[in-house]
Length: 436
Image 1 (tube, rainbow, N blue to C red):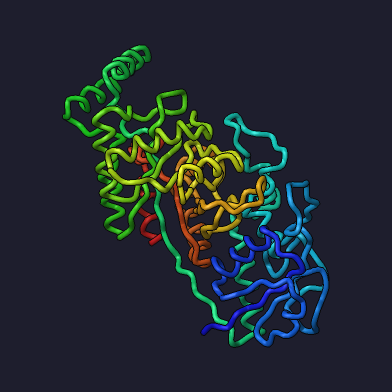
Image 2 (spheres, rainbow, N blue to C red):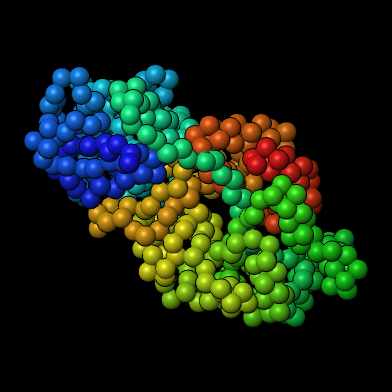
């Protein structure tokens, strides 16, 4: 039987239970027990760790608690970022085995504490990366929480030779957002006629020609890249997750009608090629009734139950979005990345459960943090395909080093090789080859 790490804390709060579960179950992988009984701690002969405000024994592993995990509610924090052994740290303390409260700092980042504080939203009501501690202190491209966990693991293993750790395995989870399934097919009579008029009003004869040839079945729809993607995924022995937009048509929701045969046939086809998830529409805005309808629209053709989700436009508010998903029995969400810059929004590349700071409760929704998005590379960061290849490789290597999940966000219509997207299929193919 594996030896158990005993962790002392004078109080055992929901935040402490959550954070130590993240560290010692998900990241480090060693059996542990929490205790608030100082006598039990003193009398224990196995590996132990003191997380409190003062030293109990000489030469113990002592993490000086800053107090954040004993609080409730959200309050502005006075944070100064420093560096220790080559990595950024904050919530600095003195007298401990390490110079900061690693558990409080990790909780602050993973809970997205700062996103509950007042901020200036972007035009879509989203929290902007420019508001974040990680961006302001230049560690957005680093999975700090994973780095910190490895350093703590090294301290424990050096002190206690009989302590065992379960090694995590790196995984590659490609994901595809189906925002616009087809450029011309499956749009219905009125939308098709309107699109012809739009092309004519702009004197775009080539577009009108492509549309006609597609509708006559003479040429492939340029956004119908699903067979191509499937061949690349299958050739590299990976299975994707398809997040399908099923909302009513609006300014930002432009997928084909869910009532049409084209939608139903596509969803059924994709369900055989990978896992399926819902892509709650821009206009659902955390409305459980609307999101439930959209889930059912995707479930019906597949006759299966959806448990995965990613918000359209990566539009989420905390904790409302996750409370909505939990109520609808969504167990895994893939929204945790910024739309305007690539990197680690929660400073972690491993899955974790969402902690609701409003209720101080861990929700049964597992967060899978994304790393990059195709549109962000080209449209926001203004990278060329060659520049994108370099950034993608660097991010993949960091996730592999941490044995985390590498999750890119892709779009079928961005692999059309049309216009500014010409040359990006090669980026996609190289990314998959490196990531496996």
